Length: 221
Image (cartoon, rainbow, N blue to C red):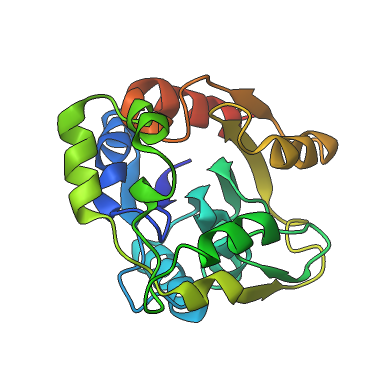
């Protein structure tokens, strides 16, 4: 790892990755983060991730949550050859086309949309479930106030990748619990290094130093 692009989810404000990026820089890496700021389409999101990776000259990508969908596009458009999925979606390893939001969650969220707009991610579930994901009340309040409202049409978006897109990549997985248990199984079955930190889905906010160490260790195998 040397030049690292950290791919934040379209559903969260970009600054949630700042403590983690700082931790990576403290460990001698050139690191930048990107979270899509466009109108909330999958195509535009993929372009933003890819452009940021190319601009940085990134050789490593760290993708959190929904950003995992766009790893094949980023790798195809940049020098990225090492990838760490950080409690993230793993695209089908055989390639093809897939939905950016799994059907069960898509159906649940569609019912919450108002005038074609989804509620902020921090309000998808009861506050008593979401608040513990944050290190303190002030951080929760700041993120809640800044979380983007994404068009509901994003739920139906699909993205594509070439067959065996991961064949020339060195991939690993760092989980923050069991939310992405299916993805952890995919990673393990593929022979990728897998590490689990019981920090909750926003583990990079809870303990950015621990996550940075785990990511670097996973990336090195």
